[in-house]
Length: 341
Image (cartoon, rainbow, N blue to C red; front, side, top):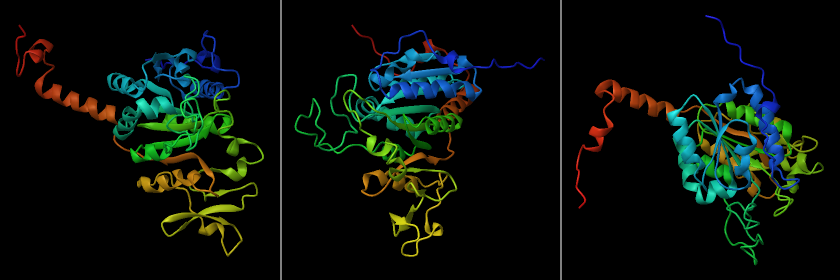
């Protein structure tokens, strides 16, 4: 037999002839560019990619990716993608969704997809607003958010996206930022290599309805002091001068200045993304909710667990081997039946 050589793919192979119709300056352009740049490097045949979306600005993604795809209904992308992955486990299925699509009407589908560990790659664009419907507050909007649906300020407590994913015991949980292109591409590649559900929260700017939502951590003069880049096996150090770190104080995390009060690098937590207990990653996910703590970026958790579509198909194969394929007509007439007059 002659070995088959895969064609060399480029970003252009994943671009479509569709006009990209996001608002000028939208962070979605940066995410699209990163995905189109990463896909050619994954060593996967182009016809094996599928992009599935729900409803929202992010959900236009399948139109702009020259792959197979589905633009489904509001919140139901995880359900459709799960069915596809079970039926065709050899496909590389990606889900593009937003904070409203995935966490409001689609919240139940999202958490059950994650707890089952379906082999999907989920990109959750978080701009803390409903953009497509023109500026209503979303499940991630902060308390007091004044929007078209909350003119006097929202009284809802927002979801912490990563905490939610970890609460569902997702096996791969990460965070990146639309404008941190090198970091985003690296995170996408990590997600692509994971077996099971790979969940990435991407902090994304909506410059029309929620401009500057993430500027307190993305602006060049503050990003080093406000973000913590997670690297497996390395201590949790951040700051422009790399002079601050995170250590344990009892059961809580604590920010320390290196060199003050005897604090040294040896006192700091060494990041372990493979910790089987999701409690460690959960602590990291809560840091940006606490004043004085940085926002963690990178992979919080990456562990191995049984993959849903594999288990499902093995079960089906075992039953067929024992009982035969069966016939649909007999199945429909089996058990209790009744006649409607």
